[in-house]
Length: 487
Image (tube, rainbow, N blue to C red; front, side, top):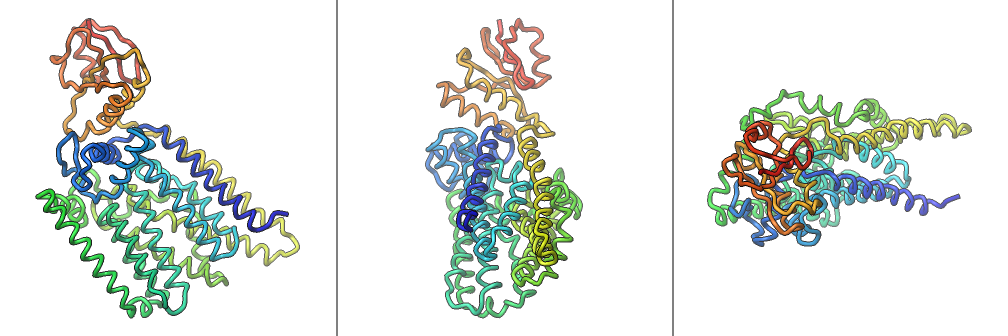
């Protein structure tokens, strides 16, 4: 019979191994256009210019990304170590994944003194598509690291304020403030979104006196206000006009529809959650009921805390007219906690009701594995073969496949788009191509720029049609694109 310590380490390494497997799979996926490509190019430029505050694109200061630079710093350092590739760009997200898994495992194993709760919590979290998807922990965006910091803040608050007795050591308040600052430096305004839910839970669980009568809370508040306001003043001095752009892109969207093409109804996130947290979504209500009725005081408090946190967060992100599906990423750790309550309570109730029929307690495990296994496989398939293929990624994917083709000694890419940002993903692979092959493929916008004997990569159907009057030899087809030689 294995000891509890041995079981704990085996379970811990099991989840770490799952994370390693996921990170390997996600590092094989091509870079995504839009935000991930924007951050990747910012990080590449930062690694060249060593300007750690002003974002650059194509050698020029850029206002497209006005978010604070914490993730870009980490990506830039990662590029300096591992080179220009998908793994380097996604490493901050992968690190965040490992840290969340380790933190949740240690926290719940210590608090419950059993492996059941951390097992179900992490099992659900690592089989949630919304958590491990585009703009979540599968790509090099900001939301993964944001999720890490707000989860840490929330767990510290729950542990040191809700569960503990009278406050004596104020260090936890300063740690909470520090992690909040990191959340702000990751994604600015998004760091504030969990606060209403956390404060509401403090009042519901009757811990407001311990919080608001502590002078250290106000000290941390003023320190954070000073640092955050100082950050904006510094950025305005370094890059005049920064504050106006940051206000428009980060704060104005709260009350104004600045992106009509991303406008959705109030119930948008509630609908998408049924898909992004499927099939665990259907356990939330019975789990909440079981948690509130639980005889275990820890389970009851954790259920109330998690429910208020999730509901408040959902309601807040539902207010602005602009809605993007990945804004719900910080919800998943506590959604997983809520769902884990169902399996934890069912097993304990079966053991209590049928002490001589212990085999009945294995039924929830069978149900859990029957749901979790196909969900985990589905996550890998959906990320590697998404249902929607972004047209702007065709040239980048094709160029990625050309990097290892040593027969290509020169290359030009025939592509024309409306906005320079549409070249971001392609520019990432041009930089990767340049570092690995020694020359940088040139982008040309029209057939008038084509020279005889050029090797051309072309994907846009209108551009392919425009080449009809040329004598061309099709070298090969890649990702719906043509690699041609012009005679």
